[in-house]
Image (cartoon, rainbow, N blue to C red; front, side, top):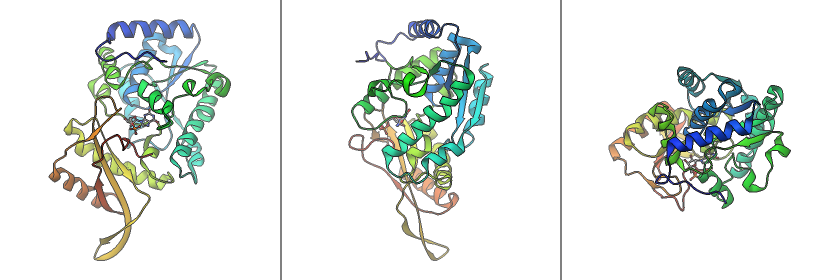
Amino acid sequence: MIQEITLRDLNPSRFIEDQIRSISETAGDGTAVNALSGGVDSSVVTALGHRALGNRLRTVFIENGLMREGEARSVQALFGDLGIPVEILDAREAFFAALKGVEDPEEKREAITQTFYRDVFGRLVRESGAKYLLQGTILTDVDETVAGIKRQHNVFEQLGIDPEKTFGYQILEPLIRLRKDGVRRVGETLGLPASLFNRIPFPGPALAARVIGEATPERIAVVRKATALVEEALAGTGAFQYLAVLHRDRVTGIRDGRRDFGLQIEIRCWDSVDARTATPTRLSFDLLEKLAADITAQVPGVVSVTYAVTPKPPSTMEVV
Ligand code: XMP
């Protein structure tokens, strides 16, 4: 049973000291790698890991083809400014090959997990001689996986999987006792820019979690474009998270005066404290109308945009 540290009980400076000491002691003079996706959790882990290990930590951004527009370069530039070098590893082919023909949500998550940990990181760790992978698993990831709601991509030990036996390296998870609000506080105390520690959450399976059915490069491109428009339009709302989803069903629409059996995008925007429960943000209808008009005008093939009004539970925040 993992002992939770609530935001109220968190002493961020002491937490940081403890984690730095623990990472240094565990890694000894060995090297470690960590995957930085640019999300809040992996950004905070990257900063912690660099404090602990300096240049013995190799930080890698896995370009899996499923990330948001311009993400690899902007994350690399942001961390470069903080003095943390980030390598970009192009693994797009491996991920799309693993996702080919996969429609079931849990199978999709499993395909991404295996490609990430077994294939891409397995090779990277073997080649670099690193013994440890440092990653930003938080308590909510563990809870939902153990409860059987969703297999979060980064949870192993609690499912009885030994990463050392399965993938050939150990996994260090310094944030595992925290929830999102605690992680943000640690990020702030570490001196990360607010644009990073206040960033909206983004799931490990990335945009594949936002395409219902098969995640092909073409369908990912559609949801990527819609995501960029949603993030731009809703950035000022103060909501916990906002996203676009591409549905599998097509719907009849009208384009240029003719029938168009087109694509359907769903917008979700959540108010939440820690992602365990969430309610749809009461967005203004004007804002939604403008966003729908932008999406249908700018994302090829989209003829319908909807807004989700169901809370979590029974919904979850992502659709996959
Ligand atoms: P759900 O969809 O389970 O999402 O209500 C709760 C929060 O977790 C994020 N999420 C993930 N994060 N790996 C992650 O690191 C995952 O596999 C994953 N799935 C969902 C989601 O974006 C939301 O903030």
